[in-house]
Structure formats: structure tokens, C-alpha cells
Image (cartoon, rainbow, N blue to C red; front, side):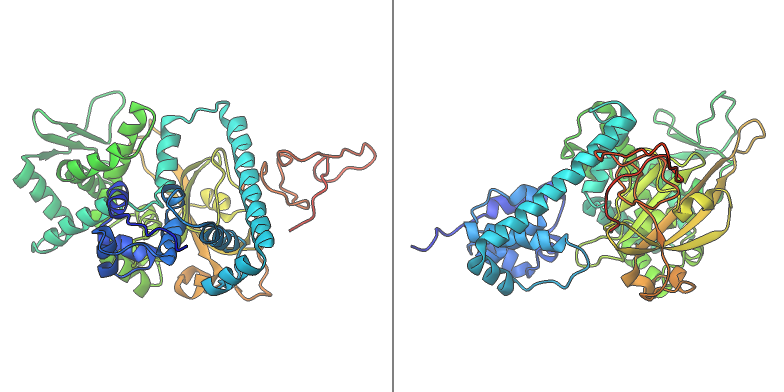
Length: 473
């Protein structure tokens, strides 16, 4: 008996609203034409098994309960499991179907092993989190950080809206920062005041909604002042768009919602100063040379790096980068990864990673070929930065930013030119965090891995006073 035809137009509309996607963006994400998706959304066509599987793979949490027969569900799960296995050739859907039809027990076993591996990884991360934070309840800033990570660090509705405003500003025959100031004054009655504050704790930005005055710390570098101007303009002009995203974010605390509001305005400011289409093209043309991009768009080194990590628009994605910011104590204060590399949620990163060296060497770019325990190689670029305080009484902020990508993108990443990226090229063996790293021969290990028994031999001492039995990957 043929299975019942499935019409899911309303569900697809709700899915687009939740993720702030238009039909073009959703069609690109699931690999359909816009016209075909439109017919499905209006219930003029039912969903085929292939389309159901595409939605299940693209939105596993939202589409898991939609009517897919057992074999199609198994094919989808097997596809995800094999994709996560590493840098392996993709298996065509016809071959996956043949595996499921001829060896269903083997397929279910592989899916079960993959599920157990994911659970184990999540348990290790949870143990690491619990140890570092002392709490099972995420703090507001952790909620917001995780929300951006789940969204892929790309917010489609906000990005498109900011890009549209950038296009309008580009029509004016003035520099973009001048155009932003004029727009704040003309459309919103906002005047800019850069008078030094006498307050003991001086804010770098303060907006008085009553007098419509925006106070900007004049000691900030020009790029920082321009960014704060863009932030204020986006808060005023994209309040509805940002508000809609916040309503659907499902965060637990009011504080997290306020932090998300600030984060989305910052995201929009970056998208205004570095419009998606123009910035992505320039990045490709310049082979992602950060200094060149800073000069072209009038932004800071950190701002350009952060923006590169957000270029994940469906159908027009940039190189998948990881990005982070590390302070003098080794704490990761910003993080995002569109690659397979995952950062420790709390505390510092692997001490062998070049970003830690960069913190101590301001204004110098360091590069590194690194290999994680899963055998994947990455090109990392890191630079130490100093943000002046404007006063002897306040210490300057010192930190480093790092940007990196999978070695397969070496030709498009200028920082890999001086590295031997061939198979014979020596790579630094880095981990994520000592508590989840299974390398047995690391001389920089600070703690044993969580959940693994250690052996202590009183008559023998290595670099660390214990060992554990785990084969090197």
C-alpha cells in the first residue's frame, strides 16, 4: 500500500518564520528551487521522500517527527553519521538507500554508534562545564553565546536589513561614518557629544533617550567610535527586526534577553559597516587579508575577523572560519566556529595553540598549521592587540584574536602561504581542552581527561605524574 501523501505547507511557513528565512534562503538550505518550494508551501504539491529527508537533514530538531517512513529516516540518520565521520567522500543517496535495504542491521548499528559518540562528547562537555562553572544552570551570557552558536553566528533577517541600509548610505556622496551621523541626526534627532565624562566609571557609549544625545568616548580609536555610531543607528532602525528575533529566541532569563538585544545590535553594526555581499566579494578577492579588509572598510582588525566568521548566508556562504578572542589569562572571551573545531565552553584553550603566544606579542601576526585529535588540520592566524584606555590611571586592554579554517581552504587564505600544507608538512598537535583531550604524549597537559582512569607509578615520573591508557588518534 502506498504511503499517505504529506502536505506540510503550514509547517514550512512556521519554520521560515522561526528562523527568519525567506523562500530563497530556505530553498538554498534544503537544495530545492524556489518555485518548487513555493508549490510545497502552498500545498499544491506533496512532499516526496527525498524532500522530507532534505528537511530532516537541514532541520533535525524541527523535522524529526514529520512522517518519514522507517527506511527514509534511517537513510537520513546514516547520512548524518557518515558526514560526521570526518573528511571522507560523500556517499550518494542511491548508495545509502542500497546500504539500508541490503544491510539494515549494519546501518542501524552505525547510527547507534554515532548517537553514542555524540552523547559521550556532550557528557564530556557537560562535565567540563560543571567543573568550571560549578552550576548546571547556564548564566545569561552563556545562554546568549550558545544561542549565537546554534544559529551558526549568522542572523539572516538582521543581516539583510542592515545590508539594505548600507546600500542606502552608499548612495550619499559622503564617507560612511559621516552618512551614519547625518542619518542619526536627520531621521532620529540624535546629536553626538564627545565631551569627556566626569563619572568615576566612564562609559564608552551612553544614549539619553530624553535629550536624544549620544555620548561617545573621544579617547576610543576611530574604528571603535564608528562601530558605536553604527550600533546606535541599528538599535533605532532595526528595533522591530531585532525584537522579532528576540521573541523567538526562547532564552530563560530577562538578563539574557537584554544581552541578546545588545549582541544583535552589535551584529547589525558589523553588517552595516561590512555589508555582506560587498565584504564577502572583497574577502575573496583579497584572499582574506585582514589588514587589506580593514583599510577597505574602515574597521578594526578584530571587527574584520569577527565579520568573516559570520559569512554563512545560505546560497552565498563564505569560507567556514573559526574565530575567538583570548585575554592575557587565557580565557576565551569570544568564540565561534563554523568548522569542525569546537572550543572549550569555559576556561582557556590548548596552550600549544598559537593564539596564546600572540597575546604577549602585540601587533604581530603569527600563523600555525595545527592538527586536532580527530586528524583534521587547520590554518590558524593570530594577532595580539592593545586597546588604549586613554588614561594612565586605567590599564590598557590586551588580548589576541585568532581566525582559522580547514586546510582545504589554504589557497584562499593568504596566511597559509608561508606554511607547508602538504601531507608531509609538520603540524602542531593541539587539543580543545585538557579535560576532553585524549592525547597521551602531550607535555603541556594541565589535567587528566575527564572520565578516564589514571595510573600513577611511584618509581617512574614523566612530565606529568600520571598516565592513562588511550591510544593516540
